[in-house]
View 1 (cartoon, rainbow, N blue to C red):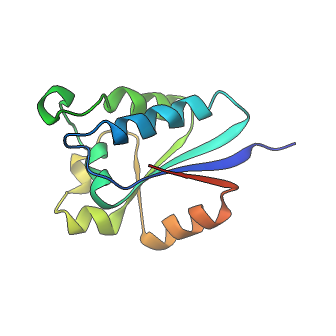
View 2 (view 1 turned 180 degrees about the vertical axis):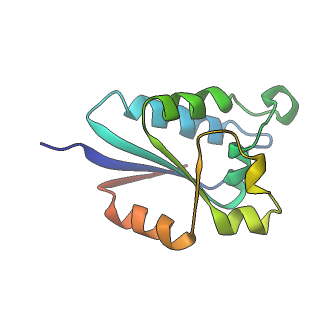
Length: 118
């Protein structure tokens, strides 16, 4: 039996909240089961893919979760249109996340067997 395709959809700002950090942490945890995990960052959550100092933004740890997802061969997708909307240069992103179009995000969500929104 193949792996279950699971998408964790992150949409909220990392500022003043641990919601994004927790979504990424859950993504790491989901890799422990027989899952093919993809974390999708869109809207204000695209800021999670940039270098952030959790102590300065009153948010949780982000980089170690993204690094671990990449190490575990999970995908971390960042919606290009959200980057453009928030004026974020893709060259400023942490190593590992993949910039994709809105259409690619929709395809990923459609192909998923489970979508967990954060």
